[in-house]
Image (cartoon, rainbow, N blue to C red; front, side, top):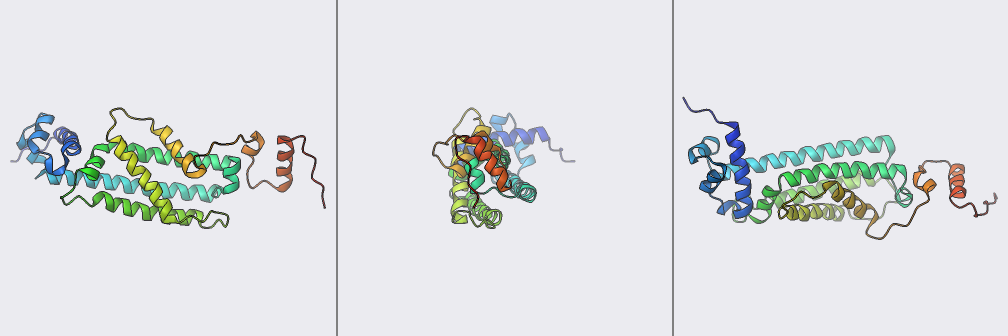
Length: 252
């Protein structure tokens, strides 16, 4: 009767293999080094995986499944936001309205989830980017990049395309900007020894994407909290409250 596989041994092998793959690449990693680092025998390795390539493939499959789950959840939550509040427009960004700030909070929370996945999988991502050349896995990361650029471009067009005052930005260019940023951050994570403040990263990413790098001008409190859907009379009251020396506008 074959000996049952120990799930703790499998987890130890995976942890050691991630480090070896990131350090030496798929070709350079050796089963003997993986088992030595995990304190297990080669027999224990082969009880769980037929080869180091099979182990790496299992890691890649789990990573791709996690990416797909996050992408699906992101689209679902963005659709719910749009249905309930509508998408913020340039006026919301200019005044940093409550709707815009709620949108940023949602985007930042979703970005943190993605950054957490990248941090957790940083060794695997490093191996995919710089350690998979000459193997069956060398195109995996770039296939992911192409797929994510297309997905984000579709979402950008879908979520923003209905606004006539949206700047004329090529959705594919926007998708490339977002995915390229994440790819570089993932590569940077592979070099870090301490976990960065991912929440601060997420907030910074959202500000850069929606407001650019120019310093923000102070916005009157009333204008920052005014909803874009307020009637004209309400907007005029807010404007007078923000600037009491401004003469009242004469009606025609």
